[in-house]
Image (cartoon, rainbow, N blue to C red; front, side):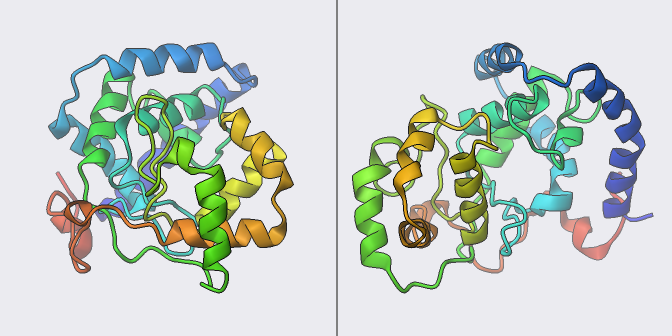
Length: 246
């Protein structure tokens, strides 16, 4: 059985156990998430253990952490550690509704606060793809003005995010993923979203939404954080040959 199949089988075998915990905890628990975030932020991450934890993430996010250009899975490579920590803790505590991710955040697969800190640090040091999907490019001046007027205070002028406030880096993100998350924040489906942003974007027209997200999709990370187009993660060389990793 190859590596990808091994990981999928492991995840599937744990779903029953995860399902039991889900039925026992159907309500979001923001306090539990906040406590785990605080704990993880004060731990010293172990990158080698983070690599091991990341193995399960490669199934969807790819070994490089670049996600899928169709936006089904986001690029997570290079993401600020505090952001990854918060999202993992929120998903685990049902403070963010993500049925696909939630089984993978269970303690049986992910572990505790230390493992969250470890994998967040590992993800942060991965170089980012230069080939993220972008929008149609038809209304970029309008998108730029919207971004400068509404988004820079939190996400930064280049989409670099804010570690102290757990505000995500959005540079290099796939256009379709940006659109989906923007919509979910607007309608309240992404429960852990910043409420200031949720309120702010209510007035955006369809044109505004397309233009600003198109512009965001074209924000690139600094050159030193970008990978070569054909880069492959050397930590997972056997993945590409379909061989089991031991």
